[in-house]
Structure formats: structure tokens, C-alpha cells
Image 1 (cartoon, rainbow, N blue to C red):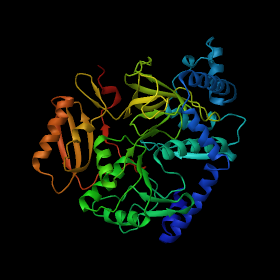
Image 2: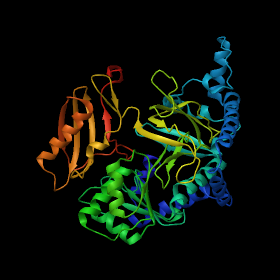
Image 3: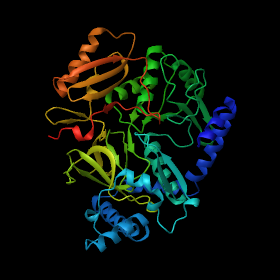
Image 4: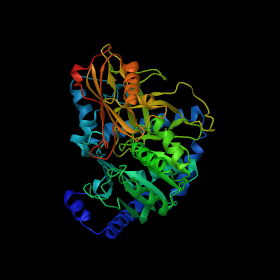
Length: 468
């Protein structure tokens, strides 16, 4: 939505905002779901029982098709290979290892150059995603790709956990469904087209949370999906209010890392399991958590490599940068795309306790830049264990200002005492060493331009970060 249209929308009376949201929802539903959806969902379930050889054969065949299409029909890659040939490079584009790493800025600067020439972008679905950094990304999907994608989502986001797209649900996200300056409810709109109550993550605060809880009680959703930081804030409000009138089938987290303390508070407040997902708008990789707690990759979506800073492949089980080749959207293929996250694949192959043979991500550590660096060259990603043990805080953000100085911003509950600051500081020092810890209590922690919450921020320039 352009700034002008957004201003007009925000000027509408609340009932009309829901009408606009519903019209948009009907439009999205026409793209996402069609007569083939149920068949595609069943086919997705059937593939979950494939053995290793079946997946290997399918992925290699699909990868060969995507690489050939990219090298011969996508302007960006065709120009790249033509330049290499003129320079005497005889490497074959049929082998993935011969392709260079693709950075996000290259896609941001020339997005249409990544669309195959036999496609008409005016007839494709255009997706704009800002990501954690707030820098815009433009992507195009064909109708076929959109419907196949949402069939996978129906199977592995929803039906794995006993809900469907037809159920009522809550979305806690970063769309500006109400003006940020608005201080009176409602902070949500009802999207009839998707049977969705979309709630703003920007307005969640202890002062306003009661209004959210009352709206959820009226709406009676089957499940909730959204940023884990927003769902955890809402869950904390439920626990502090003492309310017991919330019973969801499942809460599904997206867009941010899900930490153990967030999972615990969401599960307690809404009396349901909390399931994680991992992915990005570029759809070069995706994963979802099963009932056994494994984060399963969706092999149809992408070919995932784990690399260290030297661009050397990392063995399964070890952590590194995630580099992904999209297998799903062959009309805008992204080859060896550095998604900006760190993670590790599970080294064991076989059938999960849930019964599926889908591969597993052992860990996702979040954005590659969202780590803390130590003087001795260590790189520490997940710091959420610091906040275990029922610390009386609603949320916290760790900001590294220098190698020897880390700021911890936190939103305390009424039970917070001075000694709790010492507990947090000592836990942090136990993980990163003897650093100066600045504790900063806040009424709320600001979200980014897209409504997302960054739990760890490193402000040390890249050139000054140590390498162990």
C-alpha cells in the first residue's frame, strides 16, 4: 500500500477499515486457494513419507531444471555467465558449486532482472517484503506458485496441528491496520475474506493489552499466528490479569526467533502447544515444527547449504551461514542466496518421532548480524536462556555497543526487584565474559519499521568485529 493510500485508509471510520481489509482478503484468497488446493494438500502429505532416495532424486532433478532455467532465461544470471565466458571461465553452470553467492542487495537493486523472460510481471503476484532491516524487497510469483505455496502452508502450518484455513484465527503482525498514533481501541480489523482478526503488534503494551484480550474473547479464534515477541507480550497480559477464558488449539510463531521463555508463557496463557516456523518472503527455504518438536525443512522449497565465513561448506550438525537455492519459484529463481541467518542442519537422517521423513533443522540462530562478539573472537547467537527461571520481565533486548559494553533493555513487571538486574547481568557475563553491562528499564521496547522485534542487536561495525 502506498503512503497516499495508507493515509486514506487510516482516515476511514473503523468499520470501513474492516471492509477494506475484507476486500483485500477476498483478493488474496482468490490468488491463494483454488479448486486444486485440496489435491495439492494431499500430495504434500504423501511426500512426507518419501524415503531418502526419493527425495534425493526429486531434488536433483528439480535443481537441474532451476539452474538451466536461470542460466538461459533469467537476465541477471545469463549476463553473469556470459561475462564469465568472455573472461575464459569454462565452469559449467550445471553444478551448483560453480555458482557465486548471491547477496540480498543484488536482488533489491534489480529485482526484475531475476524474473524469467517468458514471464509477464504484470500478470504475476507482486510481494513486497521489508525484512528485519527494513530495506524493501520486491518479489514476483505466478498463480501456480502462489497456490502451491499456500497448499504447503495449509498442510504444514495448519493441518499438522488440527486447524484449517476455514477456522477463525488471530494474526499478530506488522501491518499498519491502525495508525501507530492511535491510542484508543480497536487496534485490529476483521478480514472476512480470510476469516482473520488482524491485530496490530505496534500497540501492544501493558496499558492497552486489556482491549486485545477482550477482543480475542469475543472473537473466539481456533488458533493464533504471529510474531513470538507480540504473542508473548499478549500472553504475559493474560497471566497478569488472571483470566482463564482463552483456549486455543495451537499458537504458531513466525518472522522472529522463538525463545524458550516465550514458548513457555504463550503455552501457559493460551493452554495450547506453541509451534515454530522458519522462512522468508523469498521462499528459498522454509520449515515448520511438528508435534514431536522437530523443525522440519520443506524440501520442495529450497536446497539448503550451511557455510562458514570462508564460504566453505559446513558439515551437518555444525552452525554457519544459511545459503539457499530456491527450488519452488522457478520464475524468479534465487541461486545460492545468502538469507542472512545462521543455523545448523541435523546430522541424523531417518524418520522423526512424528512419523515423517522430512529433514530437520537442528537450530536457527536468527540473523547472522544478530549475534554478540567477544574479545576472544567468539560469536554467540542465542542468549535467551538468560531469561529462564520466571524472571519478572515482559520482554528484553540485548544491544552490544562495544566489545566490552552490552546494554540490556527490559520491560519489568510489578514483581521486578533490584536484585533481578544483578541476576541478568551475571548470566550475561557468564556467557560473554567480563563486560560492562548497562541495565535500562523501559515501559516498552520499540518495534522496527515492520513491527518486528530484534532481541539481539550488534552495533559494532563489521570491520571491527573480531574473528576467532
